[in-house]
Image (cartoon, rainbow, N blue to C red; front, side, top):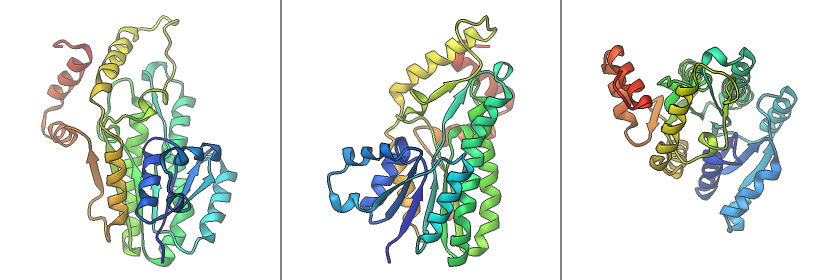
Length: 283
């Protein structure tokens, strides 16, 4: 029997590459995206019709109740669901003093509440079949709060807590939950997909120098961003395993060392290192 995977945010970035890799490995993929017109991206990557036929684009807006209801019906029509990959999300930056609460809500609606809604639609099928894997795409920002990224970091921290509890709840039903935690990769979430809330050069902001320093660091850091295909391969590897034995899977150059250093280092020292990196001077 064919294995079936569902992925959100399949039209670009990690989602696009993971969808293609899953199809290459023999999975049938329900590739969800807000606009199915963007599914032409699959044809730009694949020229093998047999593999393309394993991908079914499906419209899904994870923050719209009606869209979730239609998705739920689609899930129930499938003979099984082996893997759910919650990948849909976006990054919002800015400084907490300047960000309206409504912007935080928008960030959480997609990155957290959208994941919860999609997962609730899929869990009854997995629980009934007593098997399945749920892979939530988190971020290094789910473990480390960087300055100027509190909306994104707080949403990913919430996703981490949700996933930890969820894994313990569904493990007795044969369902595994995992978090993939990428560092910096060459996806548009940090370029065209990055949204800055509450801050503009036209405004008289106390954080203008801070924002310029962060922007410079992001631009310089792009040269060191990894190949997103690495993350797609990790996701597909987890999806293909008999069981997923760990909850967290950090990936990216130097990321595991960074997480270890943060865990072991006194906060006062960690704080000086982070701010020193931003401003390129000792504080």
